[in-house]
Length: 244
Image (tube, rainbow, N blue to C red):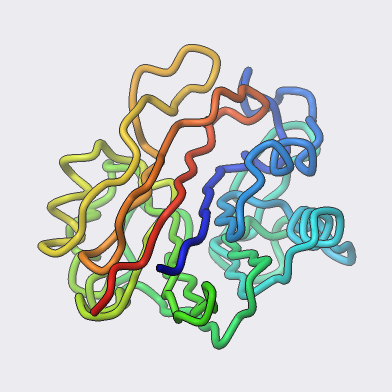
């Protein structure tokens, strides 16, 4: 049966675990330690006029950039700060990305609707169909807003962006919510593959970073990676595609 490994990490724009004004860390080193076939990134930092985190990680570690999405304009000179949803404010982009070492058959970005009050960014699902040993697998990532926004209103568009149950599918990302909330949001047919605290990374008390699979995917192994470079710990899993 076809297998693949998948990881997810909120990079915190390359800032360390001690806060929005923490010293920068090496994002390439952080992702090298995750070391999976497909890697989902949230809060990647792409300064204007520079390649930024996504290209640096892909180039150094042998990934192809399948797709990216700018959640918001931002700055992180003195501290991480979102400044606008769009326009000329800020000096770079706060990005969600999907990287793959497997062949990418297709990729796209699906906006989540509606735009939520009290959410400083736009939200979307970044998707790619990868070839896992001759079997197409749909991998998706997103970065959801804090529960201070009415996140439940995104449930319809999120579910519509996910593959149907007869298509092997995986969803990973920083969901900014507990596991039982994620279960309600994505609906039936999906289950969490990783259980463990991820935030804040030095002494985590909650799991906000999740990896979910549908019924066509079997979880061979899964874990929270014991890494404290970002303010979130990465999650990763080894997955096997079940026969139709």
